[in-house]
Image: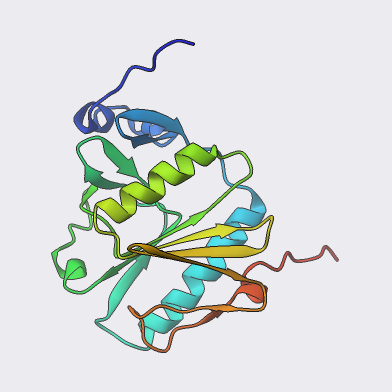
Length: 184
C-alpha cells in the first residue's frame, strides 16, 4: 500500500476551486467528497428549512448555511452538509471569504453508505476537538441520528425528535426528516 502524501491547509486552499470542491482535508489527508444523492439533498433541505424557520422567528439568534468550508485547524478543511453559527460569530463572519476560520457551533453530516467509517469518525472527532458544540450525524439507511455533545453521544430514531439547548424550543421529528417521498 502506497503512503498518502499529506498536505497543509495552505496547500489545500491553493487548489483550483473546482478541484478543491471534490475533497475535504482531515489531518492533512485529502478525503474524497462524493456527489450527494437525491435522498441526501432532501434531508439537507428539511434540516435547513426547519432551522431557517426557527431563526427567522428569532432575529439576531444565528445563521444557518449549507456546504461552507471551515478551516478547523491548519490541516483540517471540512464542509458540513448543514451548519449553524450563533451570535456573536455571525457578526464577525466575512461573508465573502472561505475557508471560514474556526468551527461552526453546530455541524450536521448526512452519512452516505459510500463514506468510510474511519473518515466519518475522524471528522466527528475534529469537529469536537476544535470546538463545534454539537454534531448531528444523520444515518438515512438506519433512520437514526447520532447527536454528539462534548463527551456524550445519544442515538435517536424515527419515533424521536431532535432538539438542542443552543436553540430553545427547536425540535425536528426524525420520522418526518427521514421519510422518503414516493413517486406518483
